[in-house]
Length: 502
Image: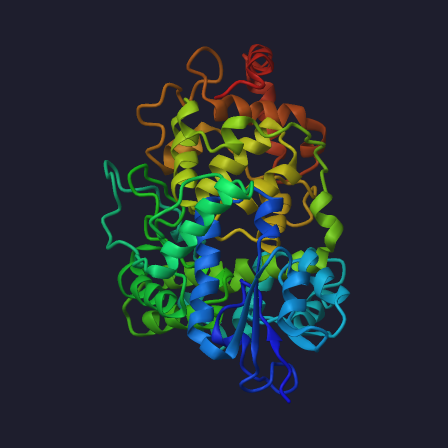
């Protein structure tokens, strides 16, 4: 008799149910899916995220029909007991330490190797071990993945003569443009399943004490395999061409720019990374997109996403508690409540509103607006990690722990990245139109129009001067403190503004 296979809500693609030698579920195995309300009771997730995840799970259950036992329960443990009793089940390696502990604590659950990624854990371990004491640099890992999987390669040489075309992918938005002017991303159409989920979320809030943050609806991201494939096709055919040059740019009136919006589909398991990068490569080989755009997208998926997934497990569970900078400030209410209207700084207000309304922004607002502000203000990195996890539709533990602890908040002291990712207002002004019409000025550090980022950047450098002076990539910036004639005045001002809404 075929052993049932338990699939989590981020393992929804067909590649989680296909046999693979002795490492997959049996062919045609019965499927168990569990909708555990305790997940939403424990943490205050973005309402759009809760809707997307539950819609995707219920759509998948409808596709599987009589093959699936779908249980709505308070906990996973209760749901599994109701689904199979004491019978054995298989499950693909979960995507978080908490979920892995759970499945290992349950009798009769056989954990299969992870799926949904290009690189297996043992392959990464071999690569990392072979590097000895050298830093596990993302760029080295990315080149290795490209070579191992023959991605964007011409023989033994990278496409276009370089592995990394980032130099060509840092263009500011076109001058005077309000929008990038490319075809919009794929937008799904809601159905009865979406309506049922929304009714349930309303009822949970009314009757069960479940609380959400942010706004919900209409659904913007794929909840089915069919929708995800349509979104991938539309991105490659109509948006990938302009993605590369402007992938780091921001426009107030065009929050999606040329970005793929495929991260939630990948992280729900609706798409496999191989089909995404191979689609981009085919478009480049057909002459439909420039090499810098294809490479920029491949680097995001086969480079950064794979790297973050592997480091989450490689660094261990204690990594999430790293706090080298000693930052302990609590997140203010305007952040936790996504109260964009309370914020004066136009960049922060605009990006918070995007998160409030959609549960998504692209990687530069995340890193150089939200994350940079949190770093400058000295917010507790564990709380910042939790906020990103809860408030983004593509946020999962494995995604946010390395991205926030390691990259955004530099809480590991440089184990993952070579420097803190923060800047003054000049960067935001150069790469966006977010400073236009703002009450603050990106070049002013003191006075009523002092930009929170211009002053916050130098205050951050001053606060951690001793540590950052030893960083080769930060040494020149730290020395710049000595050239500021208004440093003392600025520091007094920042102490007064501490705790105020910017």
